[in-house]
Amino acid sequence: MSHRAIYLNDHLMTATVAVELAGRAEGAMKAGPAGPWLAAAHSELTAERDLLLKAMRRLGVRRNRVKQGAGWLGEKAGRLKLNGALRHRSPVSDIVELEGLLLLGEHNLAALRTLHDLAAHEPALQGLELEPAIERATARRDTLEEQRVAAAARALSAQ
Image (spheres, rainbow, N blue to C red):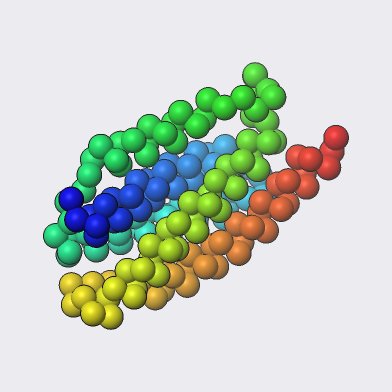
């Protein structure tokens, strides 16, 4: 497997985790202050994963389904963490999920920037609308940080 294929499949794995985590967070926090924003974030992360898949197809890079499946499974396993509550969702879960989305979003943003740089000398990547995706990912990161800070204040200040 080429370095390009390894890199893109690693990012596809984390993009898959980001989409799954965003979907979970959206459902769990739907009624809270982050709910509407998380619905948009989930949609954007899905579009970024689709953009990555499109770039991979254009470059002739095959999807590594084992890595993608491992990412999906890892996100599901991450839901089993102890959060201090057995019968209901803990406010700590909101913080941890938002922090996870922040980290995964940074990884996605790095991939978008790398693809943008690569597009300068790779005709197959030209016309992929990478700049608008980078702008959305950057704005989402900033809003996510605000949501994370607010969730931490709600959950940790009440003690």
